[in-house]
Image (tube, rainbow over all chains, first blue to last red; front, side, top):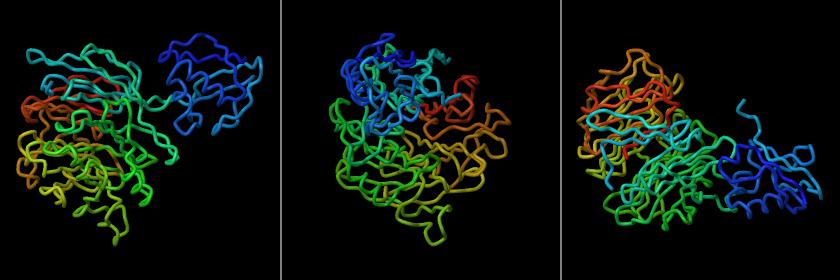
Length: 90
Length: 356
């Protein structure tokens, strides 16, 4: 299981906990599981093509995900995942 | 459920603000959807629902709706591009109810260059493939944004299957069969940003805002990137430009009962994008665009802010108008534009103003 932490920005739109555990092998998997739990959440993180939104940052074990198109970065047992907004607004 | 003269929906960079008039004076409410950019908000007079498009900086574009007048909004299913389009929605430009004869129909125009329709009150959305095919085949380009945008939707009150759309940049297109087939309606327009021999091309034009006369739906008015135009047959355009005050700008509004009456807010040019000579004023015509009168009483003598394309509207009474500007100034008139007053000089940037 990976542990996911959410930016407070997302908690404006969804009733999210501080942290949530998810069974997933990739970031794409993880987003799909989260969307099952909170319908619509996935569309905040990715667009309809499945790409990570331009101003969203996902970190896995201290590193920003590299595959922003298909989200195939690996998620391991015990991984720490952060879903954050990029500080593109200053 | 009719649209009233006494209620405004103001889409701003920091939420959806309502203004209400009671006993002759207007009151502004605190924003619904606070902090969220609202490119467009309108009320569907057929059922009273208020629809708002949202442009989250980080989280993408969404749709929200209020079914009542209690100020509560619920996010609804957003139109999504099909996989075959290989695109994602960048902006929900315009929200438009279908006709009175198609009561469950609702349209959304988007960037990049797509039109979505629902026939089940927004539960599911149909991507208009025929229009998208034209966008791809003819390589519609953006006007001020990365992708082409459908920002104007005019539904014929006599026939909900007869619809015009305005697209930056493609021009105006018409469907007579509810969106199955489309035809360019661009004859008479001229694009000064194209090579000389291409300025009257079939497509590529940049209408900034297109409106239909409710009193005579064969009459269309258009504030274009390259002048002001009118069509009296729904097929060809006559240029009405009279520089400097009748040429460049974004919004245009037409009188609900008088097809020969319209208002624009002049801007200097595509290059400057300010008021003309620092004068914020409204131009009104009552003779189909042959002559225009300045309306500036009550507006600031020096100002450089201006209204975006959806930020001018006229109420059903034809006397009450409102417009909001890029600097958050909101102006109203109760006498058809003869005199104006500022309802606020300190709103967030205003994207849209609609009577509700």
